[in-house]
Length: 164
Image (cartoon, rainbow, N blue to C red; front, side, top):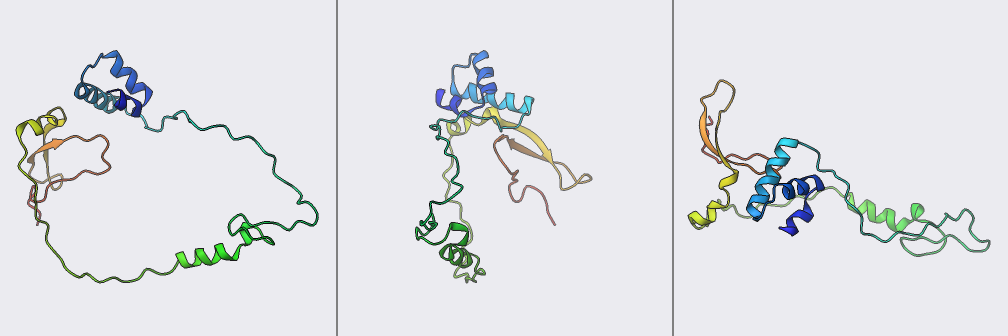
């Protein structure tokens, strides 16, 4: 559970600790509920564990008689912004995409084993019933919803809605 708390924002960890969760499943459910009810951006600044870099003032003048040195190709006589090696490399990256052919097409075949009830029981706190329709005037179809607060998409199983 401590490993999970290290990945969470401090506000969520504080809430879990206040609720005195003892099991990982309880802590996950509390964290999920807290995030859903308190809606905040996850961009909480985290402390950096990097060593401080000593400040060096930029060199204004090159010593006389010493040509500039490129930090990309390590050759004297120019600097990175004028480096021909870097410019050529960047031009090669911008080459137009090449066509590739499709050799074979194999339809997806599910090879998933039938899950036991104990394997599915861990999802029970995150399952709920709902309805979904094709549009506002469509016929509502009952569905089982698995809530995933970290998901960036919502998915629906093909064949659930009678799409024309």
